[in-house]
Length: 131
View 1 (spheres, helix red, strand yellow):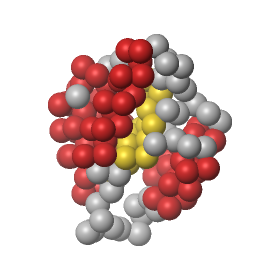
View 2 (tube, rainbow, N blue to C red):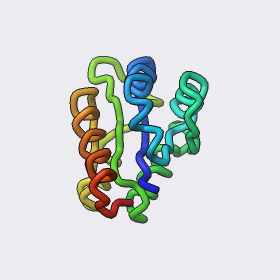
View 3 (cartoon, rainbow, N blue to C red):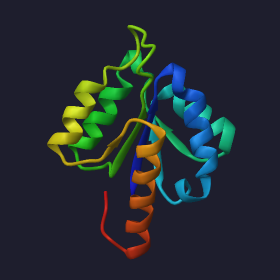
């Protein structure tokens, strides 16, 4: 089953929940992994099954980066709050570097997330092999 990762800065968690609700039918076709709090909130709001990594301060973003490097993730959805970042929030640059090294798409806002999800969904429908 194709795996996608979901991460959101604190100021974007509500946006992530809204995005997942809006696209729940499509997302239900994927194996979902997420950082701790984001994953918990998605599960509670939607009932979707989400494998939860550690919370970001404890390395959840690094766990997702490791899965990207192992070839287990087809796409990363990381909703970034560019206007308000806290020191404990993940630094996207290391995850971005890993995604670039392994040619994995990374969506950092809702517009790019819609395009990425549409593309991954189309790949499933066409039978293309994915991670």
